[in-house]
Length: 154
Image 1 (cartoon, rainbow, N blue to C red):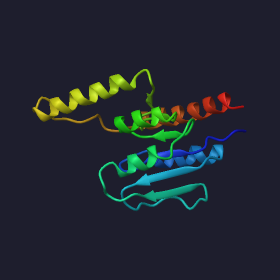
Image 2: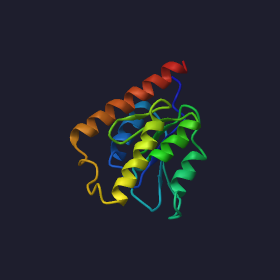
Image 3: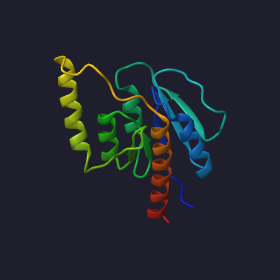
Image 4: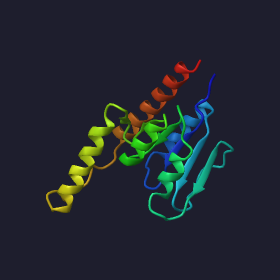
């Protein structure tokens, strides 16, 4: 069985860290939790915490500097997703959506539009609350991604 080299979690504010740990253990994979501050992680040799400090985009830069082809990156940060795709990583968000070369341009454009609308007061709300359905969809997608990578690398 060919392992995924690593799963990187853009951890600040990520609600699915426990789910990643569970799937990683089942598949025997390494997880790197990247954060701007210390946080609790399970005691497990395959799970590492990297605290990068509070410089703007420090976690993003750290992940991009290490993610390679067929690594898995978990993030809701669209610019980070774009940078990781350029490195060949597979990127999924915390709700189970996939960022791909085909959809990242639209996601970046939509992000800019929404930012502009918020700036001018046209939008005052955020995304819908994270729910059990999101968690389930994420678990399914992560498992699916890992199986697909292993099929490509027999």
